[in-house]
Length: 333
Image (cartoon, rainbow, N blue to C red; front, side):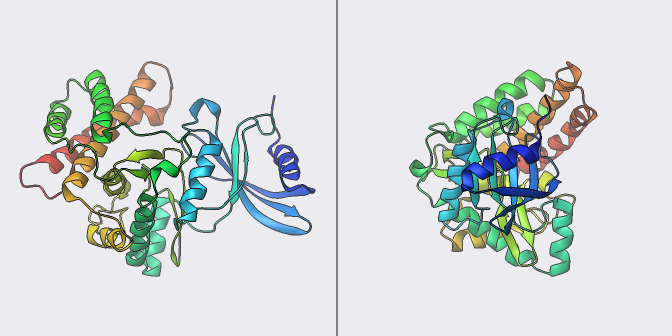
């Protein structure tokens, strides 16, 4: 049965707002890997509001939508720029999937367009400092205050994540010596539990930010948030080469150097640990390589027959190069 999103959103928001709602100007935004976003105008009592509904198929839901909404509002209350949550629906009868309705925030999210916009505005440095500060404010939150349904990292986040990724690497990449070398490097340098476990976003990189002429406007995609994680995992992830979009000289997002980002992070109260950062940067690169191999395997075994999944396998060699550059003797972190 085909579900009419206009009818479903109208019915749900009419009940949520307690008065008639008219939906217009529907726009299907570029879809993410697991969810769909629909921008629309909701008119209530002759007052139009531009909103976004994020639809999350239950089969790929990383955490309940109400938990995601709760952690977003917690972050927003601590100064992290996040679109305000307007309503949360866990009932699939309205649009076929659970969804979150948020305030619409103007700006650019497509990474290459973000880079062009920042180059045109000359605001890359200030945006990077805002980005670092937003991450630090997130890490300042007591992770115990997050909803319990937000997943918790392992007691030792580094060891737990390494064990998961190592299993994937050994299953799919056992014939790749570079991955075996990187695994040994990581195992020999396990940093232990973080001094101050934090609430971590796990994917706060270029592509999950809304950027405007005035800089950072919002952080998106909170579905992978974890409690009691290592804050250096968050700091290292957006510095990986795949999030620079061919602007490799600018380590953070393709538009900022490390000193600028870390400066914003530390000014807002974050504590930067270079050794842990380096470990998590190698870990993130290895994790991405295993993910590419998993996508290629899914195409080959018929689970997901898709040319994009197939092409992922060709990029594993790029990850080998990145790993060698990161773990070579005397390499800069």
